[in-house]
Image 1 (cartoon, rainbow, N blue to C red):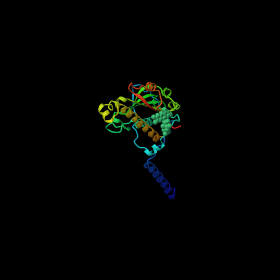
Image 2: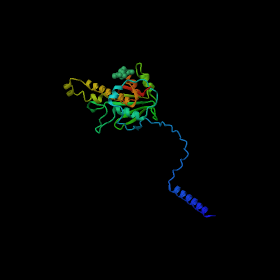
Image 3: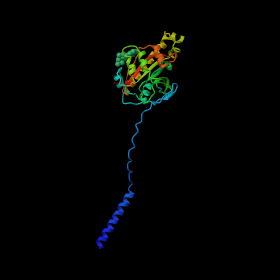
Image 4: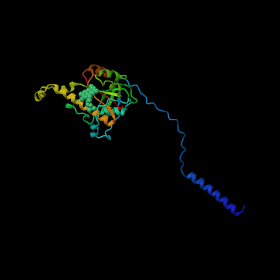
Length: 263
Ligand SMILES: Cc1cc2nc3c(=O)[nH]c(=O)nc-3n(C[C@H](O)[C@H](O)[C@H](O)COP(=O)(O)O)c2cc1C
C-alpha cells in the first residue's frame, strides 16, 4: 500500500466513525407504530332505572350570541331534523329554564316570594347515549331523576290538542312545565295581603302563570343561542299530560315545549 492509499483508508475509517458517533448522539424519533385499527365505539345507551338520578353536565355561562341577537331571532320553530340532541344541550336548556344561579338558591327566572312553584319534566326521545323515558329536573343538584320508562312522545302528542300536536312526537325532547299553585297562593292569599291589594288568592295564581312565561322565554332564548328550535304549547288535556309524566297530584301542567334541531 502506498502512502496515498493509507491516508485515504484512514480518512474513510475516521469519516465512518464520526458518522456513527453523530448518529448515536442525535435522538431518534421512534418509528411510528403501525396504526391499530380504530374500534368504532358505539355510544351505548345504558338503562336508567326509575328513581335513579343522573348528574347533568355543568351549564356553560358564555356564548357568541348576544341577548339582543337571541331576542331578534326568537321564533316558534316547529320543523325538526330528527337528529339527536346532546346531553350538554339538554342540560343547558333546563338550566336556562330553572337553573340555580346564586348561593341563595336564586334561579335564572324570577319567582314571586322566591317560592318556586314550577316543576320541569323532560320527555326524552332522541338524546345521544341517553335512555328514553320521562325525567324530573332537580334544579338544586342540576340532576335528572327518572320517573317513567319508554318513549312517551307519541302519547304526549296525542294529549296535545290542535294542528301542531305532531311536532311533540317529531321533537328530540319535550319539556313539560307543571306548577304547584299552593306554594305561591299559600302566601298571596293571606287577609293582610288581600286588604292591601284588594286581590284574592287569584293573585297567587296570576304569579304562577307569569313565572311559567319567564321560564319558557328563557328556553326560547337558550334555544336560539344553542342553534335549536322550540315552541310553546298551551293546548292539551291536562289529566293526560299529568299521567304521562307521572306528575304529583298537586302539580298542574302549564306548557309543553318540544325542542329539536331545526329541520
Ligand atoms: C300562552 C301561549 C300558548 C300557546 N299555545 C300554542 C299551542 O297550543 N300550539 C301551538 O302550536 N303554538 C302555541 N303557542 C305559540 C304561538 O302560536 C306563537 O307564539 C305565535 O304564533 C307567534 O309566533 P312566534 O312565537 O314565532 O313569534 C302559544 C303561545 C302562547 C304565548
